[in-house]
Image 1 (cartoon, rainbow, N blue to C red):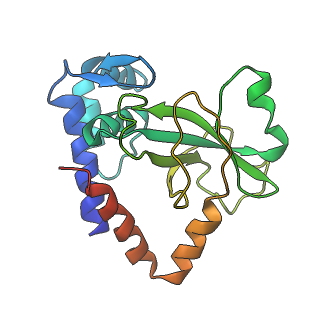
Image 2 (cartoon, helix red, strand yellow):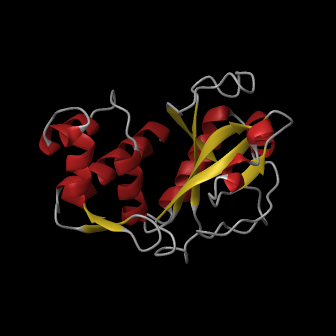
Length: 205
């Protein structure tokens, strides 16, 4: 079930990027871009054609990234918020640099900084999805020793009752990973993820 849902999401993302190249995709705020331009920009980083890029993205052995997240936001018509992992000692650096960021304290060593709100405010009427761009060793890595740029995506599931994040807004949050771990250990691991993916597909027709 989990693998099937994952495969469907992958194909939906690539279909969005390849089947209608002139389709306008909403990024965040008032920014938008044609699917073909987004694909070509991604493909140019690897010195391949857009067609080759999409062919590779259909394979399970290749990891998706920003273009695929943007595509899924537009296909599902839901905002997708992306966070990065930071050490708590750097918690105030974002504001000092004039960057509007959502920070969520995880523990004494880590916090999350919201780095993108794909699909917002265009699709804000739908509940957002939350993902973390992190070091693949997280949470088994000490604060300050994580990679500067994430190389792995993890799903985040906010506690019920916490209001969604609006683009450009900063709101105080509670820790979410501890609740996620608690749920995982109270039910079989696979059942937990199947339940979350099934909930996601409730809005994907």
